[in-house]
Image (cartoon, rainbow, N blue to C red; front, side, top):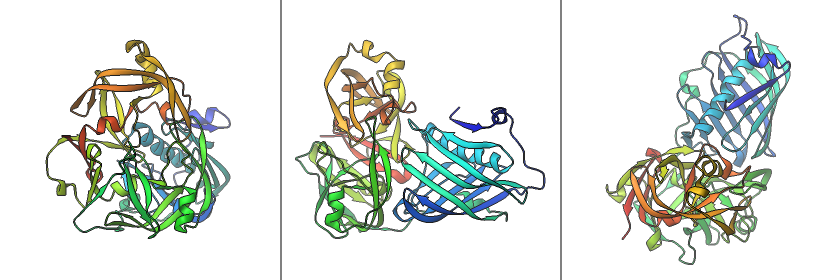
Length: 446
């Protein structure tokens, strides 16, 4: 099961409690929230008959939405830019909350909702139960996850009917300016794709283009740009530890002639292992098509991927949180693969996949004495070479791999992902990213 309901007595977990017939189908809870240290407001919408739901927080740079519309599990960031979650664990976690909360409103006795998005655990504690219009409403919710804590208190309950559109992902925001195509050079002093970025028309900064990342800025760069920093939370990364973060909002983010408006940022010390001023990734690529040529240190951005022609092998992807995830296979062993331009090392194979297929023995792998360090700490394992890597329908020969073996937590212990494909593989192609259509195009590099 991808989630659990914890209740007293335990038997109540196994026996769903139905609401009285008079209890209404539709519920809207209006909320006061403190999300990761930032005060705001929000709402929870629930269709008890189908378990469709929406949770929305309006709390400055930590604003967020997630929902289940009966077909799609989706999330949206502070800008309202929505994505359909395709990763099994992420999708199941959203649906788990929807179903569990609908049961609680109908009279269920659960005191906590526990779900497992990827390698992490998220727990929502429900308290201060009150009967309103035949509903069993928890007036206090406290949620703890790898991202930190949010708390919500119910200030109003409404039971008026809700239209189907109320549960749908929001329409994309109109918050980007770009005429034609803009091309920018990647910093040749880095093996990673690093671009020049200006935040709030401040000094030129060096940001990593990370396909799985969100907007990040270091504390020092935030000060240089005059950003107001608020709140407090945590994030995990490739390593086993969580690290503290804060939050900010920028009026403008400029890359070449492309300008994104009103963008949220995580304020995070990236450490000496990644000597850049920040990260851009999902927020940029969700709005603009990109043509990445790592071999020739070039990035181009356009409103539509059609601006880059129609060539290349097409590889569809789904979203794992913000990261593209493709169907992959390592020497014929199939597994979900993340698209990670923030990794300049070998193909990173996750610990559960390594164990499940005895890859250390299979490849006669050698210990990696130089384990790399990312957000969350060091990652140890073994080095080997694979004969082939399949990315969708594209085959890549002779690939260096790092077999992670020791992680009990962190990104690389995620059981729903087999591997992360980094820059040494992407450097063999010109890659066209078409996030709105959830599509990559791979053109062999020359």
